[in-house]
Amino acid sequence: MKKSLFLLLFVAPIICFSQTSFSCHYVELCKWNSYEESWGNCTDADKNNSLFVMNSSETMFTHTTTEQESTYYVKEAVYTKEQSDKGFFAYEVISDAGNEYYFIFDMTNKEVKAVSTSGDVDDWYLLRWYVKSIF
Image (cartoon, rainbow, N blue to C red):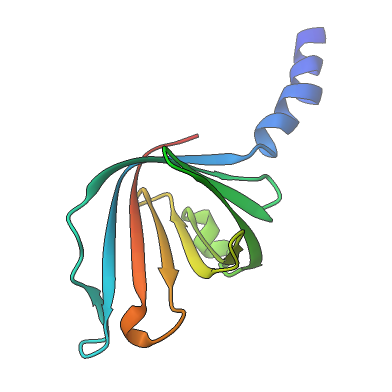
């Protein structure tokens, strides 16, 4: 009985309100094709070990690679309850360097995407990381 009470009071809250991490192993870069109005001209997926860690309150996340660590601050969560039930989470964010992005964390397809639509339309790009594990 004491073990059950301990698990209920101390372990359950840790599981329910813990951070979520996305370990990625490949990344590709796509450019916006304004003529066809679609993403294209994608690079081959390059090996790129990186880790995204979202805090439990979904107010910020970090992206760590072998070269650097960046922090992104959530301006707005832009997903519905139905989308989150399917493992889809989208955010408008600003980086610690002041750049704005639209990030998508797709648990179903095991992808993380970052879209930059700053500047001229010919400069727009999409980064897509392929997730190897979510924990």
